[in-house]
Image (tube, rainbow, N blue to C red; front, side, top):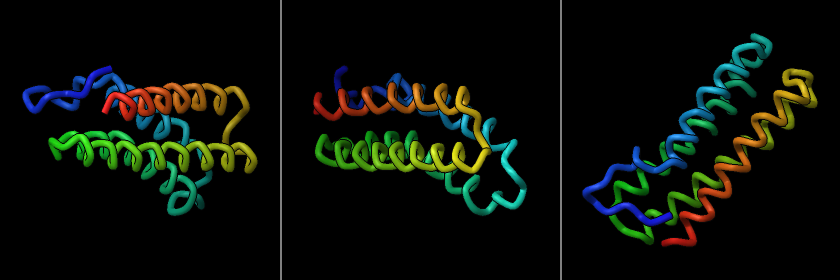
Length: 121
């Protein structure tokens, strides 16, 4: 996985594309969570998910490998936050085991991709 040049777009990164799909899946899953969680766990999980592709894009926009790496680390932190929130949702009965495992598989894949991209910098 190579670093993009300034002539390429962050949308060409597969990790960005997959993180956008994760945002979609988090929104779909959390739409079934209790209404009273709208400003709590639901909002926090959605914000953490959105932070992942947003930080990938922002880091790429800095045109500096050092800055890009910093934003990729922030994206990875948001990914770990999201994984924790999904476990909380499971423990509270908002997510079933199968749904958690599906979302966790996406989280792991994105985590591996972020780590690979960081190593390439």
